[in-house]
Image (tube, rainbow, N blue to C red):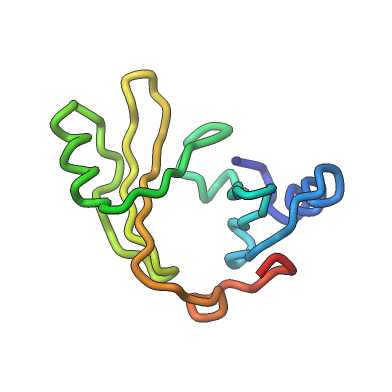
Length: 122
């Protein structure tokens, strides 16, 4: 979810809806636990112009998923890449203009290991 500022959004969502902050990454994004799931709050400037929201879906094999998406004509916005927070991800746009990030866990890291800060939900 894209907001003009991450910290006020996190505070409001946690207080109003009972979400629990899991981690924050240098003020530009935070993950909030919601029941058995999670949402990520992103700073508007750091979002790359994706509008008010984008979807992130966990998959077992990002590279195979990326190959399938290419075969079906997905517009790839960022190719598969490894990130310091232990994820391999790529981002695509569907024919309706919706942005999707597909993510595969490749390492189990504490937020402090990649420059983040653990929240009460860790």
